[in-house]
Length: 164
Image (cartoon, rainbow, N blue to C red; front, side, top):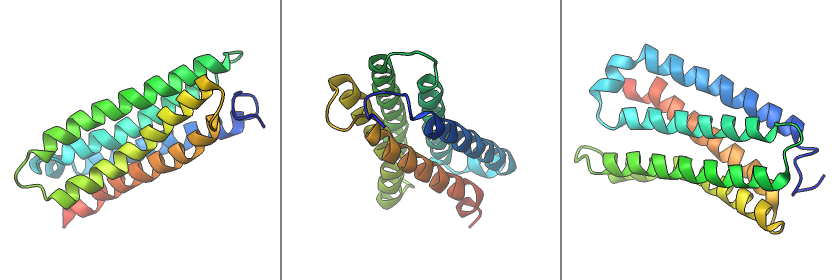
């Protein structure tokens, strides 16, 4: 398998789409079940946006990677752009919420950590694909795992923790 060509990564990308889509469905259910509580607690809507942002980034990256015949350099640029856009949008939401006096710094730091590592690894995957050295798509695998983990943490908070 080549870290700088999409060929051979199709099954991984299909699994990524499936996992991200299933978890996105869980987030929508969690939000709809707990909507009044989520809206009542400041900063929690941003956490829901983080979860959906991570999952949308994964979906977009995997779907673009599955485009038949796409040159690897295009997919590298797409990974770089998706990772950067995801990180910047979520960081803007996180900075906004970090200014809320009722949020504990530990909560904000955990939220930023859970949300930024995956997109950062996607940026590295895209940059190394473009450079054709440094790891390429092998950076995408931990990016997917950490993004899914971050989204699952946010889902847990949206389903369970806000009820405490």
